[in-house]
Image (cartoon, rainbow, N blue to C red; front, side, top):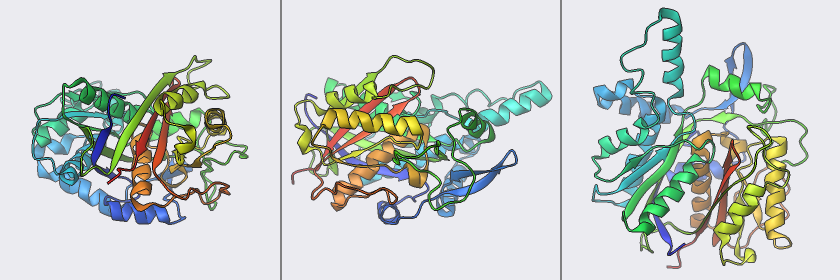
Length: 387
């Protein structure tokens, strides 16, 4: 990177809550946020927004008649964007926006498609409310911004690709501030059915920890889905109000054997982590927040990649997907939020059912990983501000 980028504001809405205090308290608890819901006659683990968070979304929906027709993905992103800008103290509206989503307006799309199958006709708003681009455009409308607005989907690494885009815009000199993140509301029958068809979804059996993310000895896949959104405010250079600094970005794509494959040693992650490290010595990385969705091959491949890159200087490793599920396009930004909170509070959050042989004494530099279908990995290196 040409120079560091400051993260001056953060906000999210997820099963953990909406305020940084509430979210940090949730992370310090060994409890997960899994509940069970019937999907096509089968009890299925999912992670829903809290009742308080849902009330906030419904209040937002009723603010404006135009908002009533919007999908949850848009409203989640809009809610988080408002708070992030407030937390950063931005007074100008001259900033860019890049909020992505893996699936986009899932609930509305399924609703409108079912309506079409039943009647042979489509509702007037079916197209404008289900296009992916309406996430960032509605946020731009709500915040009355003048900068560029981008929405994109790069599956599960979408949010961290938004961070890459924001950094690129800032370092190009075309923008001074950029709002980046991801939003996902995937808890719908067809989306759940698709994940079950891939044989990667956790079973409906009740246990202490239904998702065994980062357990390298598991013999069955245990990924489950959650909903939420996260947004960061990025500014070029080192700002006094920065909560963390982005010191490195990395990205890579590996050759696929099939649509959802990842190599045994996760070549894409090895490349993305090395690029993000740049000239930073590997022994300076205190923690890697893994993508680790809870699948047998995915978790092990990423761990193998970390071992290959860090060798005898392995950092501490953790993930949040055992607790809040896989939020697809929003997952990377929620992992990045966990990293920021650990740096701010100088406390490592472990996975409770994993024996941690490495507990960091300090938290200065943390790497965050994400990867999606297609082998498109992203790694972001953040650092604690020196002041």
